[in-house]
Length: 293
Image (cartoon, rainbow, N blue to C red):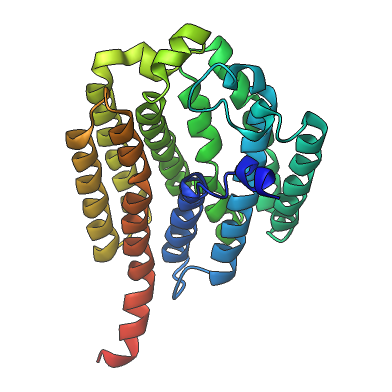
């Protein structure tokens, strides 16, 4: 089973975390907007299962399409399909298995959320192809990985409104920025193979682009929070999130692949800080209410 576990990237859970966090943010934000005492724990668990399954399915699909390219890149040539540890038919069967898990999660959600989730499949399907035709494939990944910002809100409110759209727009830029950092690990091989990325497009300007992107992310998130409106703990979480992103920019060294990977992975911690603020904003006022005069 080990090659299949590697194929689903279960040994590298950071991708599942980054797919999950917008779902959790949106669910918590909707809980505040709907005056609920806490984010729905059932939704949080369903999104966690769905994130692992769909991230694995996305990686499997990516590895099937990119198997020839992966053999030419030092970091990816040992991936299961590229190395021959898993055949293409077996990978396709595994893809279907993971997609069925994701479908089971999706069908557990309200009807509006099901339709919203199905609308994302086209973007997910074309993402692995974008690096062949676009210099900004990270933008497509941003749309795919940010869909959870719509899903949480749709599951609670059964509609899509301004806070969810602002959160989604911010998430797209967040993913765009952190995946640009990630892409600097492969920029030399990508240039040889002919694969495009924002790492190659921006080059030495990457730090500036990431800093500007992160600044707009914080502004969009603040606008989403104000449109609900949220309270003190959400603001505190956003400040912590912004400080974390600032630290990433200061630590970034595009010529150090290990540093790029570490900065990329740290976005999980930034996202958990933001989620903690949102969750506390719904939980604490309701917990203290019976104690207040």
